[in-house]
Length: 259
Ligand code: SF4
Image 1 (tube, rainbow, N blue to C red):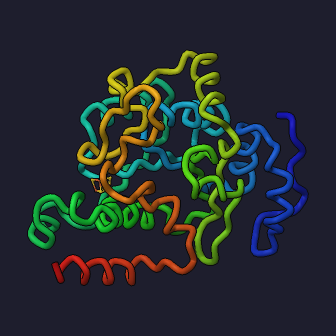
Image 2: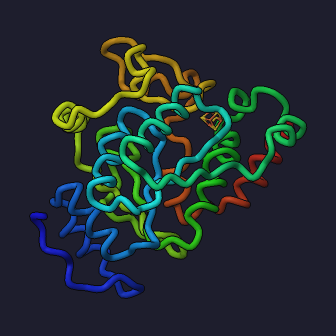
């Protein structure tokens, strides 16, 4: 460890701006260690189990192996993603917690029909990713994710710690990593790649909404192709105090039914 932990205890009196000043320059493993020491066991990391996820999962296995790793099983994942998740669990002894949508697939098809991900990907992501994640993090004090500032315009605006009333602190240990940093780490530690990575899937989400990218394309160019969408909502809605999940569902639901 190279950093000195903040001297204020976690709680309602947390000085988030000051914490952000301190943690901004910390190595990822120190931020993880701080989060576990300060918020554990009420802190979890979420992961989509793609190639880019492996460095954070590896660090969790080294720094805080008991930390729960939340995986949202949307029901639309590539079988290769599920196999990779199981491989990583076995290799790094991860404490994986699987979160599933409240809505059954049959109910979803009855209510919204086939191809909701094409007609209304925001609603589909809400039902299959955001809602189960909201339940998975309920009661936690901290939620860690591997987002980086260089990934999207929205992510470029984030701080290491994002605080929202009534929700766990959102903690981003890799926020300052670049894609190059990620690959240096993967190569230095000889970490495994998602089985589809070699086929051009640099960023892997649900199968219907992911295509491989061609050389020179942005790593997330293959996500939600043709839709004006760059985020599933996990790292936007859940930190937006104006976005209430239920209101959003009702609004989106009404919009879908009107079609
Ligand atoms: S990524 Fe696609 S299939 Fe997966 S939840 Fe979002 S819209 Fe639905």
